Picture 1 (tube, one colour):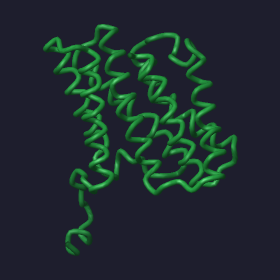
Picture 2 (cartoon, helix red, strand yellow):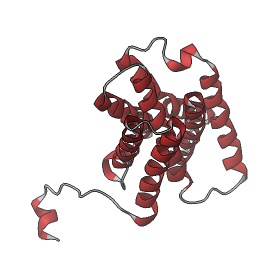
Picture 3 (cartoon, helix red, strand yellow):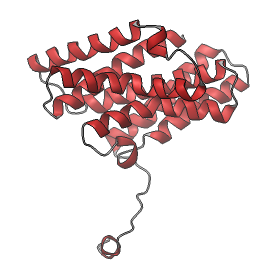
Picture 4 (cartoon, one colour):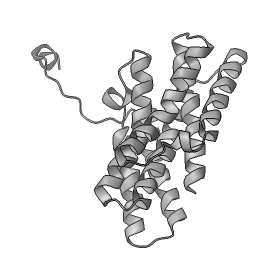
Length: 207
């Protein structure tokens, strides 16, 4: 189950990275760089913090090739076909759901506490997207868009709660991923977001 989550998450996040690079009209090398940062960044940071060596894509280079192939396939397909408006956000939401659970499960397998497992799941889910957006000179989605990190936290909590009560792990993982995905998609399509911090007096006076 853990391997499947990683593979699917890498493919989907590589697609989201490639689409972000495409919006900035980067060349194929730029597309590959952004895609690999998006799909491997979160897992790399997680493994470094957890001291889980070697890092996931060094231990298993198939992850690296999956990211490259997904990025190249996206580069080719986008040049041939029109891509729907929310494709980037939906791919990102799917990757968030899969990576959050993959990170949570890995920390759990290494014997870490519930709060560390939740944090590692969140980091795995969002760090690659943050790096992707920074490279593309965008404010990361996690900081200014619809429900994002909250969705990852909700999914991680559902999984860890079900695991605590000894629910079948695959069922717990599916429900955790579904929770993250539903929350994130609700944010995308219905504009649900957390309250913004209004510091400027001008902004307050215009309300």
